[in-house]
Image (cartoon, rainbow, N blue to C red):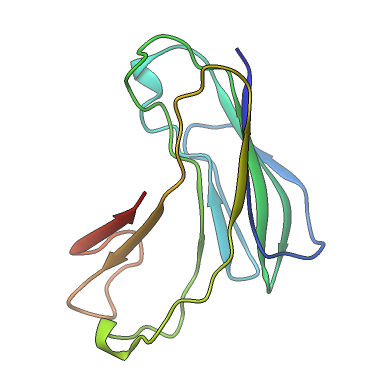
Length: 137
């Protein structure tokens, strides 16, 4: 079964690039996209994430996959994010403006979309993680 997840976050015209490696990553214009097949060993198949557009306003991308087996196991978590250069304490943030659109094509899909936010006590920590994680499903 071939399935597709389409995700877009505000974006005018820019680029088309396909990421098919387990953790292939691309950054441009203050945004990044990761194919992130972190659970690929729990089933069989493959996935590619195609970046359609990146601009200063956002990113549009989609993922196509052919996973089978490991019915209740997560195979991947492709994602996009914003590179924040102006780091702040949570108490200094009044809002996080955003827009997201997504859709699924295919049958018998087990999938979801989530916001995943990381924070740390030190605002200058490395951006690859944090002390605290908040996921909104």
